[in-house]
Amino acid sequence: MTRYAVDLLLDEAAAARAGRAVAAPLTVRLAPGDALTLRGPNGSGKSSLLRAIAGVGGFSEGRAAIGGEADARGRARLTHYIGHRPGARGSLTARETLAFHRAVLGGEASIAAALERVGIAAEGDRPAGALSAGQLRRLALARLLVADRPVWLLDEPTAALDAAGAALVARMVAEHRADGGIAVVATHDAFEPEAAATATLLAA
Amino acid sequence: MSRALTVFSAVFMRELRLSLRQGGGGPAALAFFLAAAGLAPLGLGPEASVLRPAAPGVVWLAALLAVAAGLERLFQDDLEAGEMDLLAAADAPLELIAAAKAAAFHIATIGPIALAAAPVGLAYRMTDGAALVLAVGVAIGGLGLAFIGAAAAALTAGVRRGGVLIAVIAAPLAAPALVFGAASARLADQGADPAQPLLFLSAYALFAIAAGPIAAAAGLRLHMS
Image 1 (spheres, rainbow over the protein chains, first blue to last red):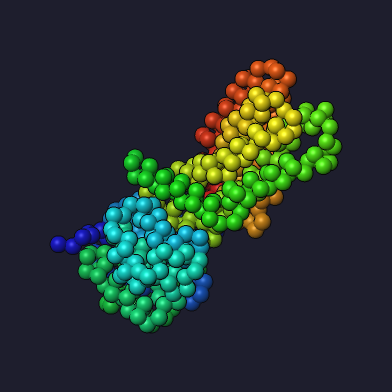
Image 2: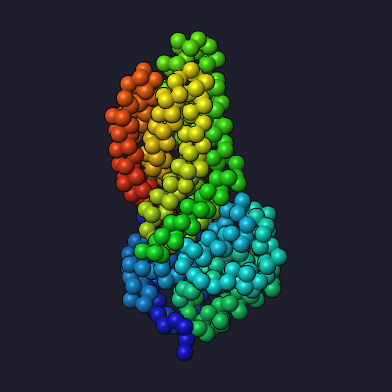
């Protein structure tokens, strides 16, 4: 019995940035447990597509639906979006930041366990401003663990991470998919979820 | 509904924490207010006959400028940190999140200024009762300033050093607070009943609480799309 059972549908979807289409339309359907890797040069709209699916940005044409939910707010509630910005305020500690994210996202899982899992348990009481880029990235990844959301939208999740960190991302994504979750990953580097479909975006 | 309440209180408490911990929060706005109110007599002269009638206007203007300077970072820091994306995906409407931020700003930044307004009024030789009305007025009118200001702060969140811009955008919208706030303190100082301008001030605050978050959320969506 898997935890999640929703699918993700992109139907001729072209993400918009500042109201303009940035990538050619993409049509793809992901079943529970599937993954999609987005590749393409800088400016090809990978980040914009992730933001649009997450309901934060918008589409200039086409639509996205998660488990039949096509409304932006509805999609937002079913997704984790981890962008390239840290998602933490310098004067709050790692623990406070994660507790805030858990409250906002409506999760119930243990903060301590999540920090332990991403390897920054010892930094829990340090302000986020004192963490390294890699540690901040790990703190963002911990967000995935404290609230259950079926669709993970990850924008270059291994950026700033060491080899062990990249392996951690791969394991987390694999476990999420084994639970029936879906992962959409924008990446430049060698990182790629196993047996993932790949979409190469071309600038519009 | 209870989910929305959880999100509201999480945002509210976090804002209070941030305001105390990082520079430019509540303590800085209070210092700005005290400096402005303390400097004005150097220009006006020390005579009670000049200071006392000027007190309501000076205190309200100082409070308004302190608030505008403090509002600058209400949304900007979270937009830059990517936190606004997360808040937009929260289990609560953006309007509610903007309201939580404005409410926390009122407690952390305007609260101390309102408390300080009473001793400042006394130092300007106002009567005890008038100084109290001044403080109450700043607390009530400040609620309006926080929520109207939040809308201006959301609109200018993409602009570096947007504090000046906030003051300019919010100036016409802040006029009622200045007019009725200063009028209530002046009436009280003359021994008259300040109830009427205080009621207008309350109406202004209620309007701001209703309209401010909607405008702020619309402004934030512009920056995020």
